[in-house]
Amino acid sequence: MEQMRKRETGIVRSNRETARGHYVIEVELSGVFDVVSPGQFVMFRPGTGETPLLSRPFSVCSQTETGETTKIELLYRVVGTGTARMASLRQGDTVNVLGPLGRGFDMDKGSRLILVAGGVGVAPLIFYAGRRRAQEDGGRVRIIAYVGAADEDSIAGADRLEQYCDEVKIATDDGSRGFRGTVTELFRNDVKHYGKEASVVRACGPRAMLSALAEVLDGHDIACQVSMEERMACGIGACLGCAVRVRLDDGSVGYRRVCKEGPVFDMEDIDWHED
Amino acid sequence: MKTDDAERPNMAVSIGRLMLKNPVITASGTFGYGEEFAPYLDLGRLGGMVLKGISEKPRPGNPPPRIAETPSGLLNAIGLENVGVDAFVTEKAPFLETLDTTVIANIFGESADEYARVAGKLTDVKCVDALEVNISCPNVNRGGMDFGADPEQAAEVTRAVKEATDLPVIVKLTPNVTDITAVARRVEAAGADALSLINTIRGMSVDVYTARPRLANVTGGLSGPAIRPVAVLMVWETVQAVSIPVIGMGGIMNARDALEFLIAGARAVEVGTANFVNPAAVLDIIDGIERHLGDAGVDDINDIIGTLDCRRK
Ligand SMILES: Cc1cc2nc3c(=O)[nH]c(=O)nc-3n(C[C@H](O)[C@H](O)[C@H](O)COP(=O)(O)OP(=O)(O)OC[C@H]3O[C@@H](n4cnc5c(N)ncnc54)[C@H](O)[C@@H]3O)c2cc1C
Ligand SMILES: Cc1cc2nc3c(=O)[nH]c(=O)nc-3n(C[C@H](O)[C@H](O)[C@H](O)COP(=O)(O)O)c2cc1C
Ligand code: FES
Image 1 (cartoon, each protein chain N blue to C red):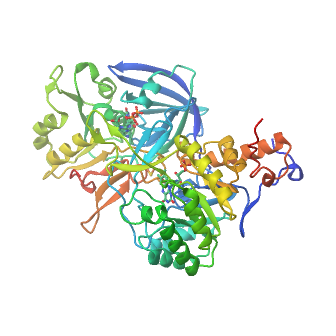
Image 2: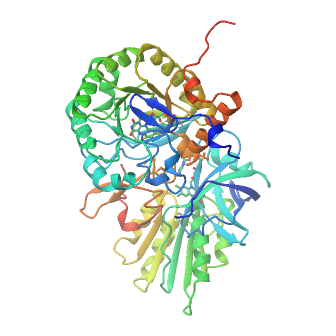
Image 3: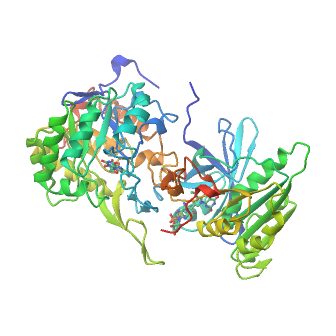
């Protein structure tokens, strides 16, 4: 029989603010925790207290296995009750972690990889870039990352990306660092150079950003996978709460579960029209 | 640590002619079709499993966002998304047939005839041991709500389903009524074998920064601990109003919560939202009830049911 899975109890090893309002929490779990593919997520909840009621989904940002235990990092931004409680967790606190869940990114085999991150969307892309570098077999892949943030102080994870990327290009809404404007506008200026030369894109960020990216990529023959966000209750495909609208093979639209068929989807499968 | 079987209290209960290993059932819409939870717990340990609501035709469900958390509660407007009865039979039933668990199919429709047709089709499906008739879904404009809120229509659906099946029929009541006992009595008179309650309570939440409703559907159904006191009250009132068995639910998160319903007179309980917080929550609840019986020196769960003592001290 397949190994039973369960919600694990983890211990907080560190939890620190790395950019304004952005934190990285490191959680130690027992060694049976599965190997995570970049793009997969966990349902996370503080181990005590009744608020919030439900766990919250977070992309895994890194995983380090030592046999006995496995450590995962989550990069998060405080936006509401759940993430505010998360930010108050201290070293030694217990937390509940269910995962890894969902479908991660397909590992690309091309010679050029482009990452497009909006805000905390950088989390799974840091993981992806690291894994991609580790899997380099002979031919070196050129990795170029585009990172968008509100302003200089809220750029999270760009330093982590720099470890793996040949180039990290930054866009801020107010122009306090890098390009002034959105990350997709910055990418639009470059996309024509990428052409067909075996470039693939991996992207994660708010829906509006991904939708703008879909427009930028329209007409270019560049394969792109995106990690989508929806509110989740269960994370395991049971509640149907996390529906995202997709285009079906017959041209009609339908819903898919972000937690199960996603969170990573092929860009062309998503129905980008607003409701 | 486990004691010998001989020393363990009896946990089995009966809902009319439906026998359950223990009184803990997973609630409709919160446990998928069982499969989703198979990696997380031995489904054979459940008292029973109610499946996601099934209609005659597939339904796509509501646009997102479909859920929002509220204080101690979950607001949902899934829109009764489901694969339809035919796809259920071919795609979902085979897995359920491999299980040693009581399976209760939850059905709904937009007319009494549709309820009857779905009930008829499910009667021939081997894994289905009973039907739970959802006459109380607040999320869909047509269907659900109208039946459950009107004792006459609730009775009509009950009769139609009873005629279409020889499976035990559990009618699931909505709390969104002035007097739940009025509906309960009429449904009993129409032939229901048992009642289950409560379904979600209608609710709404507003994002004050955007001045928009937090659900795309605007309104939704509230579940979770926030509704538990309302549910306990309605179960207690209903138990006194009818003589058929009552299954209680609403905000059960742990064994203590489940015992509240059992003591108030519910013959069994359903657990919904708690499954989302921990996929193995029902096992903790089953074990916790058993431990409670042991601690209280009670050797049969049935000796706890309906023992509420309301005498003035
Ligand atoms: C697969 C997946 C991976 C994610 N990965 C990360 C990550 O790596 N880092 C990170 O910081 N966040 C991530 N998120 C988003 C994160 O789950 C939400 O920010 C979090 O649930 C908010 O919880 P809260 O209690 O603080 O906010 P709430 O009080 O619940 O809500 C505050 C605000 O955030 C919005 N919101 C709530 N949940 C979501 C959501 N799931 N997606 C978008 N908006 C939401 C609400 O509409 C509201 O405006 C991910 C979401 C998904 C679905
Ligand atoms: C996401 C979700 C989906 C639900 N779907 C159904 C359904 O299809 N049919 C039904 O009869 N009840 C449905 N319900 C109601 C539950 O079965 C249960 O009556 C209610 O949630 C109260 O119990 P709880 O507080 O333990 O969740 C649903 C509830 C939730 C939260
Ligand atoms: S979060 Fe429950 S189905 Fe996706």
